[in-house]
Image 1 (cartoon, rainbow, N blue to C red):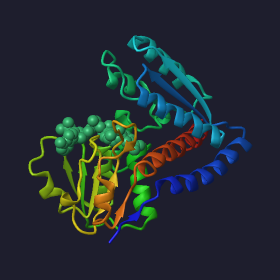
Image 2 (cartoon, helix red, strand yellow):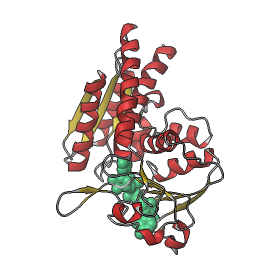
Image 3 (cartoon, rainbow, N blue to C red):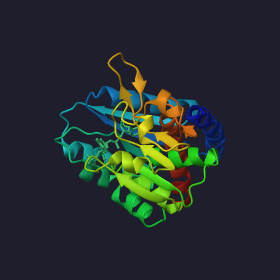
Length: 285
Ligand code: NAP
């Protein structure tokens, strides 16, 4: 058996085509959706993600403003910028590219973003709404994962879903979304004992660890659905996920590739959230 590939790249293209129409509709009403991105320091991966976001905004004719700062910027200057962007009616979405340098308090900075412009969904307000089953903006990566599962008509209700990773940006919100869809969810992390015993029970296994070849075929159940969220760069410069794709593919029923799986969906969901923010602010004004 060889698993069906969940083609995030094609799905993201399809979603972006739909979103282009939404942008044009907004423009016809005199609204120009605009996303502001704040990038601090010279983390190569962050720079790459920000340039993907800029490029996609351009494709969709969403205005993008990128604010780049030196590693040493102080917290007050960043907070002042976020204040300005919060108050700028032309800016619909605000995103702070993570991780931030250690001297900056990530919580304080994220909390400053107006929740109505929190297109990443990382403010305590948006995370609280998600916990309360009444989301405002859903974090883009988990939202993209659920969209992929739905597109491929993979049932979630009553299924054993295992999420490896408990970060606020991926693991925790994804677990909540799976729970909302009536999956039975187990969250694993670096202190979990007997991980393979747990992963072997998973009908749906979502991996967000950040370690190459972390999951091999001995760790999965025959016919499992494998969602590989990890992004790793090998010594030879190749981008790979957390799952040993060639091996696991022989045993799984569905699998996401890296690249071309969750990554493009994350960006498509960011665009969707930005357009939603523009619509929402239009209603509020
Ligand atoms: P993170 O904050 O570093 O979280 C990693 C998680 O993995 C932690 O919860 C950690 O457990 C867990 N972990 C580490 N070693 C483990 C082990 N041996 N066994 C079980 N769990 C272990 O990372 P993140 O921000 O969630 O990102 C995870 C991966 O997804 C990264 O590769 C990142 O680049 C990628 N990512 C991809 C996208 C996309 O669009 N495709 C978006 C975001 C992130 P502890 O909590 O106990 O430390």
